[in-house]
Length: 140
Image (cartoon, one colour):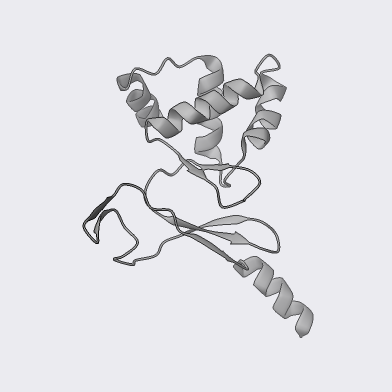
């Protein structure tokens, strides 16, 4: 966490208590939360915090490369605190988003057909291991 705070300060980010709360929430998160999910949790501790503050903080973190914004759910954006290149699977049963590591030379940054690839996001849709286990348990 202190490395992230140092990186943010080095990038000139003013760390207000509200921004720090969003950063801490994301770094502790094991899910890919939406703006609304983050806001609902943080407003309990910061009742004066607005949803716009959460959104603007997420936009700032995305712009400086500290998080990823995912559009895997068509109706709402989700945020991933891991900015490194990886892919995601949305379970169509429980709607959980899983991080997926795919080693595919075509799905990476670099040159593809003489084009400069700046960002890659591959979305997979299917059923997560927990839901598959439940499904197979019902059949037995």
